Image (tube, rainbow, N blue to C red):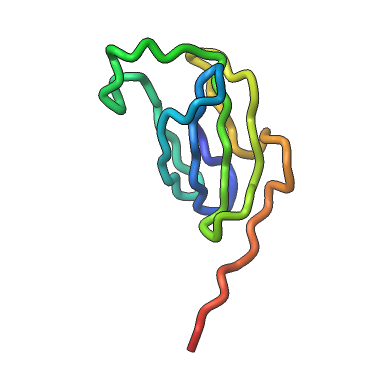
Length: 92
């Protein structure tokens, strides 16, 4: 998973049946190589193609990647969707 955006994003990974597998947060410009063993799921036989839902820190949808094959780099900026996050409002 590659967050090639300028935002910190949450990535939720789904299996081919759209069952949630894991969630993680990636800072702007960061990359993580996800494998079944990354999340201690070696015995679960999780299979692709996968989907990745990218969300902003506010919870708003950034975009979605569908039909991600095993071993493929999934870029946030190639997701279908707005690919934007609104700044979080601060309370004073």
